[in-house]
Amino acid sequence: MKVALPVKNKDNEVNQEWISLRRKIVSEARRIVIKLGSAILTREDGLNLVAIARTCDQIARLREEGREFILVSSGAISAGMRKLSMARRPRSITEKQAVAAIGQSSLIQAWEDQFDIYRIKAAQILLTGDDLNNRRRYLNARNTLNKLLSWGVVPVVNENDTVVVEEIKFGDNDNLSALIAGMVNADLLINLTDIEGLYEKDPHEDPNACLLPFVTKIDSRIKRCASKTCGLLGTGGMLSKIQAAQKCMAMGIPMIIAGGELRDILTNIFAGEQIGTIFLPQETHYHGKKQWLLQLSNPKGRIFLDDGAVVAIVERGKSLLPIGITKVEGSFGVGDPVECLSLDGKSVGTGLVNYRASEIEKITGKKSTEIEKILGFKYSDEVLHRDNFALSPEIMDL
Image 1: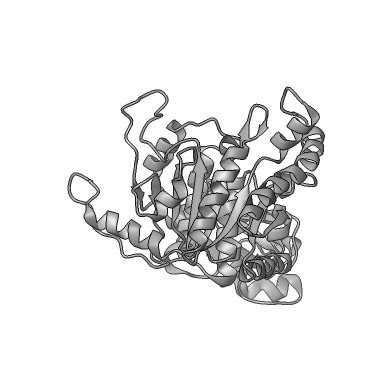
Image 2: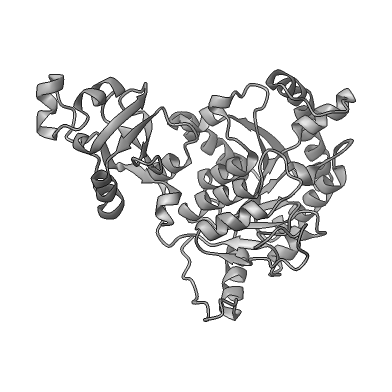
């Protein structure tokens, strides 16, 4: 979605143009991803069935306007705890995975029971980071989601906690929801939590803290605000929501953070009410393969670049040559996704390499004309071509 941003006045106040822009974005959104976190979907004794019922009721009404929805739903572990009458949350990975296995069926059943009232079908989709890191599986997942939507089904997505390990975790469902939004080219992501949006200070500590209604750039100020905005959240927190927003903005997708405990929150958002914080997309953003590269959660390795290479890639859009490489980490092959970093460890972006890790180590710091002499062959002058590279959201926001 391409958005022309209004200009704020000297006092940085939100004027009618900004309000009209938000209403336009929300009004025109047809494909929407809704993320509901643990703080909304769970209670001390298990799932919050009232919250699930209210969400399904609102979605049923909004679907009559020609909108389609994907849900990213937490709650499997909490549902499992209730089934097992567990008093404390499991701590070990094995315990969490076993409890999630028991609870996931209850979670999808709760959604199905409520959607059945409105004759809406729900489908369960369980993913790991490894599923989306693999280009073929990523495309298969995308095709499945698109087919379900074409059938009028509401996909309910969650991380596959039962089999996931640290190396293939999304980290939290905030990140997963942003990846799903990009995968299906959503028009809008709504992240419902126990905080009514992004505040300049923690509203629990300062009742006069101001809500930030619009964000156009994730900078150090916004990250400081996120670190001060706390909630009774699950795996994620406000910082993880900001990271998800940053991904969405780079993919051209607006994202709203709003209070999921507010009654009729979804219908009120689509009625044009100024609720929560909206993160507006960048005017230039990624599509296709570059969008997938932007979403990768666990690249196969890392390549460190000197300052000249960083400038060439970021400011001039050049490909990566071996002369600009200082160090290689990891074991990866030709065509694998690899993260590029500056000398001080900041992420520059992710791309698909033309050489194996062992080969890149041998040509590190060398000129492209020396590649064949060193390796005995030459696939390409570039270690990584600009067409197979996506800048990190952090770099894009600088």
